[in-house]
Length: 356
Ligand SMILES: *Cc1c(COP(=O)(O)O)cnc(C)c1O
Image (cartoon, rainbow, N blue to C red; front, side):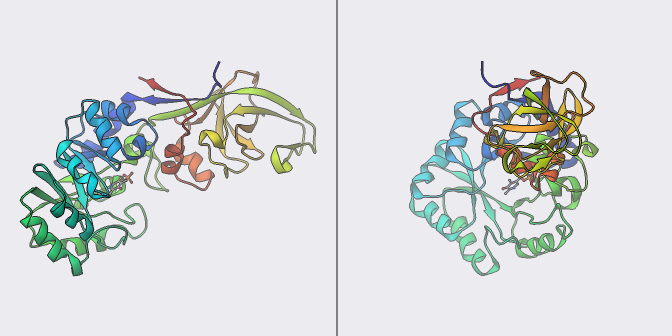
């Protein structure tokens, strides 16, 4: 038998969350962002569950090719565009829409053989200072793309740095508007946070990611308040229990000491499964559906949990690490990380199963 840990992915939750995104998007079309193996949920599975999306956004050419092989015919947005000239012929071959963010990429499109017409996204750096053109180099590159006979259409794009935070989108939005006011093109602006919070900052194509997986982009607003449902539920079981006397300690570094007699459970899940290693004592966890806390340090293959108030807990008792009944956002906050990182970090050794 394999270890009892499992990640169950709910197709209906993914479809439901996409419909929530649709409500917020109004007339805008939706790129379902399924990069990073669909935030750990499985690329093909996520594309199938969210087939009602208008297109899919990924990073790697392998991911894009896998979607085409799986029968996806919708547009595919390559979020970082081409990396090397050898990527260029794949754009037309697989009907991919690259984000073009640098003059190096503009040159690649000019000099490498495209083989046919493509649509492109032109990315502007509106303040985040990772990717995109600035007022200094936008004009010449835009002109070069307009003159490229293989470029069929251009959509203008930018990415918000703090749509989920205190700064918001106002300055970036104004700057983007100013920089593109003479360009007669469609626009793509919003990630999940902007889609949920700034209806004025959407454009014609939105790019939600994290919300599709049932998590909140906001530290101060739970996903449930947006009617989002967790798509991934990570479960396992107790594989042992221990009865500690007052003063006995638990795990590596003896980091937790029982103040009184204490029953603890040993869960088959550790950081090698993707559970955050820095989750401190007190991080929430469900044992037999009852909320309790982890005690002691997270180790590679095991977590130790407080069994106070959980009658009859023993070997085989079910445990929920996150998902249905316990938000990944809440576990992430306790562990000093984000649901984004936790979902993406789900380890390849964890079996993933389809759930309704
Ligand atoms: C990942 C990504 C998104 C999705 O962001 P979420 O916060 O997960 O909604 C949107 N746009 C770009 C450019 C991205 O890289």
